[in-house]
Length: 177
Image (tube, rainbow, N blue to C red):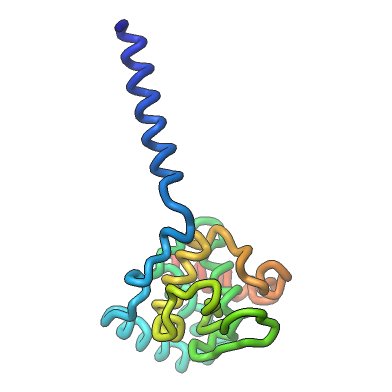
């Protein structure tokens, strides 16, 4: 085998490995119930969220920053407007109320928590997780591919998050400094 043929074979093997790694799991395979148990870290983060929310009121800058911080901690990157979108979607979905649930307009399940994670479409997300702000944020990050795909959220599809983007951008700027 010539040197060029050997290099091409190694390149092909490396390329197949990268392709296989990217295709090995589907979005649904990534959502394991064990990943969405409420931990001690969640409880501490939830306390910080509650304090920030109370101090700043839900519509205040601190309310937006508290949700933006949750999104960032959950793994949503500060790239582009990912944090801002996550924050605006949470505002449109729940008004930043972590304990809220909704069945209106649902053919299946109950929407729960900040990002209104649906119990039917995401049974791997327990009620305890859905109503824990930080665990709900991890679920949102997993479902939205870390803030890059929002098609599962009705408020995003219908532009209901748009009125909240200015304050959400400011919150992203504050937490992503």
